Image (cartoon, rainbow, N blue to C red; front, side, top):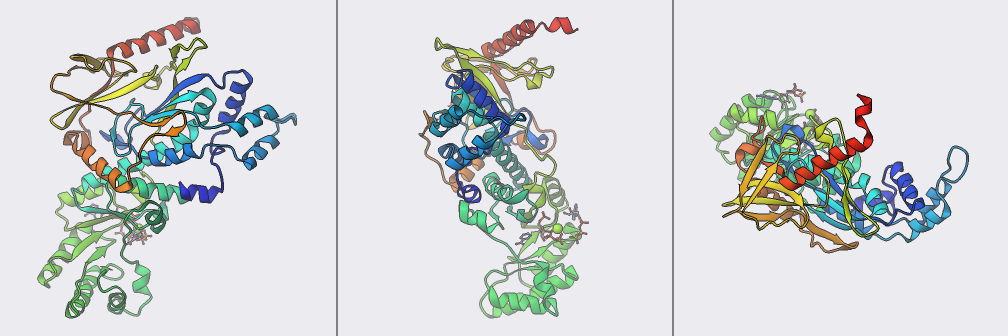
Length: 497
Ligand SMILES: Nc1ncnc2c1ncn2[C@@H]1O[C@H](COP(=O)(O)OP(=O)(O)OP(=O)(O)O)[C@@H](O)[C@H]1O
Ligand SMILES: O=P(O)(O)OC[C@H]1O[C@H](OP(=O)(O)OP(=O)(O)O)[C@H](O)[C@@H]1O
Ligand SMILES: O=C(O)c1cccnc1
Ligand SMILES: [Mg+2]
């Protein structure tokens, strides 16, 4: 994560919530710091009322974990912290503990570009309680955002039905890394290129773009501006035609297209950035075709999202390339994914793993306890169901029953005969050492495309999608219920009624 490291000059261990550090200190004080624990990162609801979510961010997570250490200036800052009564917040023994801390966790995770669903652990961290705890905030920060944007991009690209989508979001993104991470995730989600040059440099994403209205406005006439641009970039002319009058703009683009052709060059296209995009793109298409420029592309931009793109396609707009900025990189209609990171199991001093559950009045907020694994069953290259079960469960069985953790009436029997099965959680770190071979950004994007094809189009529908079956294997479902029952009884809940 070169950019973030350049920006913050050093380790990123302090990129966490203060309460993670106070808990770490208290774990240390109470002698629990090294107790082994398992935490799962999962989300409860798809964003954008989508029927699928596309996982992204693992590459940042790997960089974060590899650099997970407290530098001297971090320790100095923590040593100087004082409580209200003026005493140091953290004892020197704890500062010393942090100085020697070496990342030692096991991490399993779903690969970037995998289609994922609520309740599935996207990341599973096993290791000393203190380390697992300190990772909560940065892991959520990384995975929540990139997964959100990759999903938004996949929806926009799905709406565009195979036509190219360019990401133009830098100017409206949420700050610097918000923009960079969004460009990366948008590419994974299916965008063809970004306008963000630094994202191009850092991540190896193709960079592209047209020109702005200011270019036209800096000349006395639009025609002059197009001619001058053609001099500079004879092979890359996509003229923005709507500065003064879109139809006259198209006529000027055609005139310069003819000049280019005389010189053995070709007009690449035009861009329309205002007005009724169906109306103007159809007129422009007709004008370009009649003038002998059937291959000139029409790029459209201006506050687009998946719904406007769908509507424009229904209207038979003649748009070949979609430029999408604000609504993509800000995830305009849902600004956060809302994934959580919860303790699922803890090891006793006798080495026995105990599942843990957080009880809530809202069923959706009760986490899935225990050390879990996730299997995806598929038939003839089509995913049919995902099953969350306890580690060590026998996946060779002929039949499983899976139950939706929130609504057990949604249950499904899986007859495993003739089904392929894939374990979704891949080993990333073992005892702090990276064991995962990272794919490059283009391989991740291809994986996302293949993964999306793996799911029936009814799950990808933008509105009211068909729900893909994901559930807890029966014995895990029962474990969760019995733990909730036990914890509620321990709590003496009945006294409050
Ligand atoms: N045919 C269409 N069908 C549905 N939505 C459209 C159509 N044409 C344009 N839009 C969308 O309608 C909105 C128009 O927004 P707005 O009124 O701000 O644009 P404008 O006035 O045309 O352009 P600007 O303010 O940039 O000059 C945009 O989100 C655009 O994508
Ligand atoms: O609309 P977005 O999806 O964010 O795409 C990027 C926008 O950025 C540019 O202009 P800008 O919005 O800065 O100015 P404008 O509104 O006058 O076009 C471009 O012309 C697009 O309109
Ligand atoms: O290259 C473009 O056309 C572009 C870049 C950023 C924002 N809007 C458009
Ligand atoms: Mg605009």
